[in-house]
Amino acid sequence: MNEKKLVQKAKKHNKKALLQLVMQQKDDYYRLAYSYMKNPHDAMDIMEEMIIILYEKIEQLDKIESFYSWSKTILVNLCKTKLKKQHKELLVNDIELHSSTTQTTDPYKYKAETMDIEQLLSSLNPYQAETIKLKYLHDLDNATIAKITNVSVGTVKSRIHNGLNLLKRVYGRHDV
Amino acid sequence: MNSIEQKLLEEQKKLTDITAPPELEQRLAQALYAKQVKFFPFKRWVPLSVAAIVLVIFITYQSNAIAYYGKKLLGFDTLMTQSLKDLNEKGFGQNIEQSFLLENGTTLTINGLMSDENRLVVYITLANEEGLPDDLDRIFTPQSITGFFTNANINSSYYEISDDKTKMTGILQFDPINAFSKKLQLHYNYWRNDKEVVEGSTDITFAYNHKEALQTKIKQTIHNKWTVDKGTILFKSITATPTQTVIEGTFNVQNYDRLSHGFEGVELIANGKPLPLEGYGSSSTFGKNNTFSIEYGGLPEDVTSLEIHLKNFIGYKEINKSISLIGEEKKKVIPLENGELTINDIQLKDELMIRISTSDSILLDKVSIINEAQENIPLKTTTNQQLAKNKDGTIINERTLLFETNVKPLELHIGGLHYMKEYNKKIDIPIN
Image (cartoon, rainbow over all chains, first blue to last red; front, side):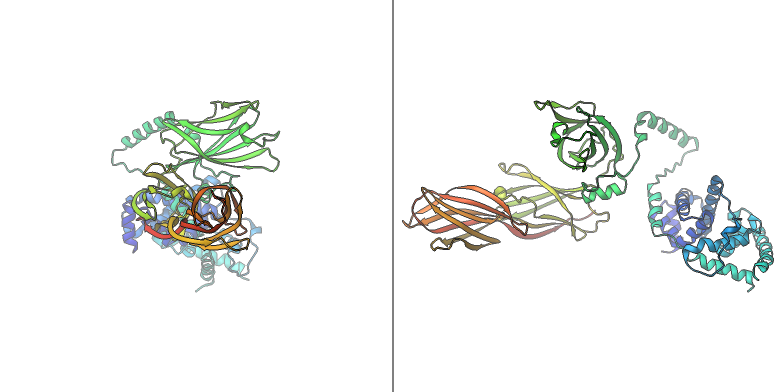
């Protein structure tokens, strides 16, 4: 069944359709939640919260085609709220965690690997870092990022541009 | 592509190694389906005031109920049937964890309940640091549970005692109780000074929460009449609850109680697999339409097909078989319809005694002998019946046939057989 039909069904409080919609991009949602929450447990908790909010609010979704950007915005906002509550730092500065530079695809090493990029991104301001992550790691379009981060598309573009330029300088130092 | 973008691309690839765990769908579905969202088309204050009123009513009316929480019961695993286990795994049932002191210092803890239209299951623990008595009925024999329009008698109880005999877990099964009961009272007997039976104290009262109890899944009429050799069986209805599936009906079978196998040859098959038989019961066979109920384990979660399979049931066959009793060999084996008859011993004193054995699913009918005087002597009675278990688990029924004669027998005549006949009939139960 195509996305539009599912969204229409979901808008009529069809729980199955909603679940199907989310499951179609489950990995994207999960990665997004994981990258904010940093552990599978919280990531799944957040997704549970998300699906309930989607269910309650899907009536308010006007553009049927923007279901995914809308729902991901909600997911990220939930993550941020929860992180604030947990007083967790979004960006990691602990230099000791930055250990491995070898290329590996072992998912258990993912944490160490991402620390690499987190380390890099930590030289940016948090807004730039978040925008770059959403853009390049989660493949979201500028408009969705704008919604998630609650700024205009122009701001998103400039954050990406400035962020990348800054990174190039920092990365140049790393890349000996 | 410049190096930083390449680096980001690599990171993205690594991220794709992270996939949603398989249990995610389950969890999302659970969250979503557990959510009861009410949509109010009214103005804002309407739902708010309704919520306020509901809340007030809820708190005042159900203040006890708020304390309940779903939790797994631990320590009953070896006692539980598979369906109960599954439900317990999922955290169904009402948790109680309330303790009471019995007469001799033993603590009785009501751990939890599960209930549905078929039965009420109560989980208990008995503990006494000085050791529990070997005969439990001295301190605790559960009788019934009463409550609002409820008087549920006990049906069965299983216990398991710890190695040091200080702790005992038990599962008690009662008749179903009324959904509107708020409080239940457990009645039990015990012995005082080993002399008199005392009805237990009425202090054992605990709250009941029907919401946490389980709802009936399927209740369906079947109405399917089957003919067996000596009568008919009418399957009337099936009631399936999470803990149990019960088939009820009436039967009018002349020779039903001649063998003790009853309805154990009736299978209930869900999705191609037979459910575990938990028991059956039938009313007295004197009347014409006797009722029966057969109990099975709970149905699997997604039932696609359901059928009743009358594998075997008591049947009857005229055989008119004559067996020669002349000859010296001690043991004689004669093949019968679904087994064999063994003649173990023949003794002739004042009466003729023939010791025979068959499987417990065969009963001989219209038995007589012909003696040397060419008289036909009918069977007087059967005595000294003994059941023994074979190595392969089958049960052998050994008994002595008595004939009123003192003349040497020539022939044993068997007119007919009551036996467990393979009917292999099936009916489909449509699933709504």
